Length: 77
Image (cartoon, rainbow, N blue to C red; front, side, top):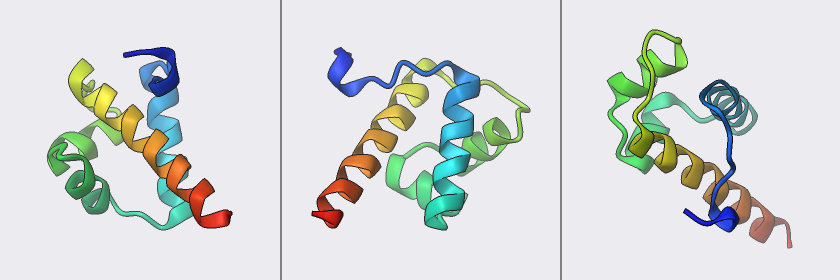
């Protein structure tokens, strides 16, 4: 991944950012699971700090956050 598409967050920061976005936008775990293809069970356990997330799913979550942020910027303009 190049630096333009990578938030470079560690797992703890990524988890916090996902939870922050969920709260701010009123998203549910099911919404994120559907949008990203990350299994709901994986997402749920990861958000509860009961498991770690694979590098592949970590990259997917980072891209998801980037896409959410860029789409929100477009909506504001």
